[in-house]
Length: 423
Image 1 (tube, rainbow, N blue to C red):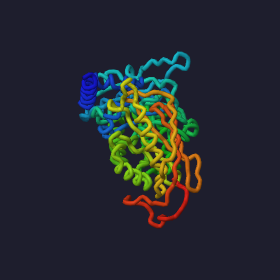
Image 2: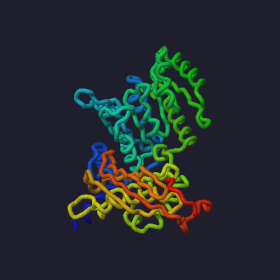
Image 3: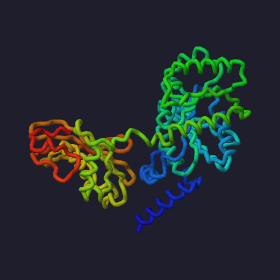
């Protein structure tokens, strides 16, 4: 009864987030930021609703005017009838670990509009201009149905370019008077710019900065036909802001949305396609809801994962050891059988280090450690979502001469050839 009640509450929470309930969104963001026990399950259930928002990253040197520009962007986007969420990353003190979280204050009245949701987050010492949880927080507001998600980085230097992996469109804000500083930073954040903005364009030095940036772009190779524009703005007066929103729209049409969800797909390789066919034939693996992450034939590896659900919990409230063994054994079996011959397990051993609970994400990566002519051994590392080692597994197989009959995609010329598994 308690489990049914908890499941119903969780389902209601997911539905409220998708419906745009501000309180539900705020609580979900807190759970994700603080890595609470229910965060992993929440993100897993919201994942099908992500990838629709246009994520715009705004970065640049400290004092460039990023927050003021974002405030102007909020006004322009809401004038166009769009719902906008902002995830603003503030630097943390290296001494106390605290943060002022002043971005919301600097955005002023724009943050109080009904169709705008602003959340500040401390970087907590994470490098790259973002916080550790930034991407996952973007997933939450994306799933909540916002049309645009703006991510503001801390004052970034030349190596802080993590925003490029999250944003569909990266806007780099440059204050007037950069001068030789353009040369100092062009190897970093200027290189990831999809749009360059010269802020405070009413300054006497703005024209020179605009020309310097335009000259720098002549040396940069164009990406996919997109030509990076240099746009002057005076954010407090909304000058140039409409042109910036238009440029963001054009870039989204050019490259699409959901960049962070389009990481190189390791499940589209021939080995991964074959591994999926193995999984389709394994009713128990499907019953446990195991997911293929990647597989490599030449390297002899396979990775599978699972999110701990209520049905995976044992009578003591922790993850059932049988699920952990099944996950490790599946990764081991896939890695050992991708060569085209039946690899029969003859010995396994598993050591448990850390317990798991409902909502945790568990990943098992199998890789070969020893190979003979007919016998080979794999190791499997099981890690939690935060990277902590949960368990280790080792397994030894005997490789037969029998090819996997009935599974498409195996090379016929290999049939009957005796060799050790190649992975």
